Structure formats: C-alpha cells, structure tokens
Image 1 (tube, rainbow, N blue to C red):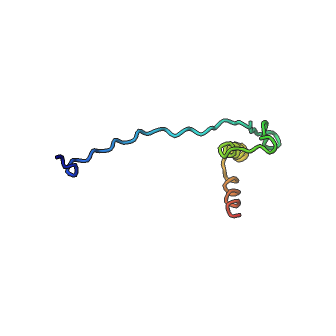
Image 2 (image 1 turned 30 degrees about the vertical axis):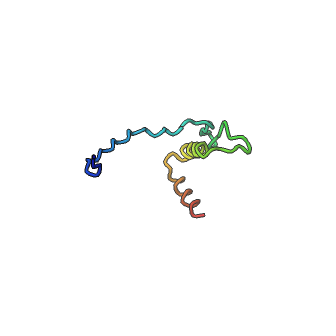
Image 3 (image 1 turned 135 degrees about the vertical axis):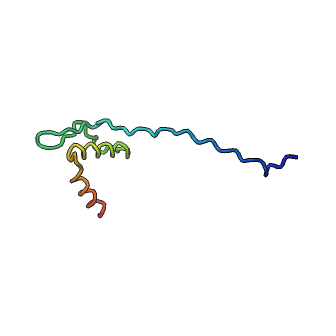
Length: 83
C-alpha cells in the first residue's frame, strides 16, 4: 500500500500571465477644443445610459482636453469627493 502522506508535494506550475485588456481610448464622442471652449461633436443622446466604461472614457477626454496638466481637475475632484 502506498502512503500518500509521505509523497513529495508537486509544485504547482505558475499560472501564465494573461495580459489585461487594454482600455478603450478612442475618442467616441469626438471631444475637441474649440476657440471658445470644449465641444462634444457626437454627444450622448438624451436619456442615453452610458456604461461605466463609456462614462469614464467621456470624462477622461473632457478632462484631458480641458485641463491637460490635470491641476484644475484634481482640485475639483477633491471638492466633489467631499460632498
């Protein structure tokens, strides 16, 4: 009879690293800087529900277009978090 308790443990092979999916960085809403401010050429339709990913994408494009250094954005985010 084999005593399995005394058998050397097999090492688990490491799981292969699967690259995380890249974020969708396309400018779906065509956020652009105009002479007077920021324009959204293809805005979401009225009452359209955006997925969290699409909402973050739109917010990121608005932020980077309006405030490339992120200084104003960071200040506003801190204030919003307080509410």
